[in-house]
Length: 265
Ligand SMILES: [Zn+2]
Figure 1 (tube, protein in one colour):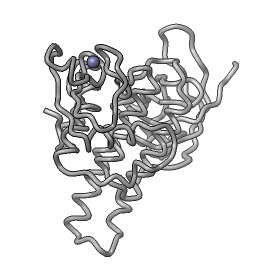
Figure 2 (cartoon, protein in one colour):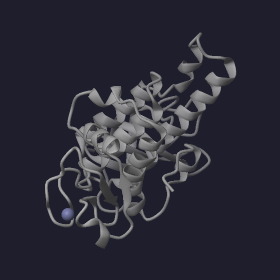
Figure 3 (tube, rainbow, N blue to C red):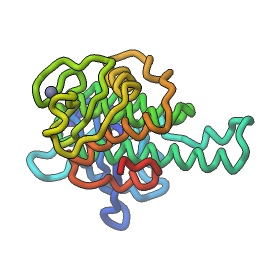
Figure 4 (spheres, rainbow, N blue to C red):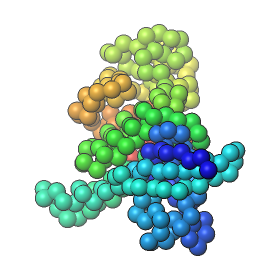
């Protein structure tokens, strides 16, 4: 039987029977796929410890045609997701550390849910895979959770072809200057200039600082965005852009978003 190998991130698992589990992977090679892991619920089964949520593993599968599930034959853990590492920082109090690692865990779940909701089966996006793995690493290492998630949302929107227009007005096409006060409409799909704003619907006003931060956060490559210093107001405006775009695309708030405590609405 022909098999395929892939590097995979576990983004969902559902119990299938007494002993088996259906695992949804976001793979670097094939995009999202669902596979049946026979014996996947056994503690000492063939995949013991390899199929935890948000783990990165090397898998071997028998790919099935059309609608049926692939069959997982091997899974070897490359790296697990361990936000508890934050608790080891001596500078934090015990309570603050555990609250923080819980927040990081929810942030990881949110990354998984974004990939579930916004990617299609068998539609590979290797750069998005790399970005997701890098995002989980950034979360583990204690980077600003809020900023890391907004960056990932923008990479996801870009890689899946849903990136809102951030350098020209979506209504008239006029180039956006960095000194302009602007508006954003998730429904229209991008920034809206001062002239077009009165006729646009569902807009959010962006200050100059938020517009500049948005262009840095959306820039291809580099880590300059990690040094952004944002006020609470700028965070609200940027969340309205990225999470507003996702809300518009998916049609409902993501399940895990409520645990992140920074809803755009
Ligand atoms: Zn315009």
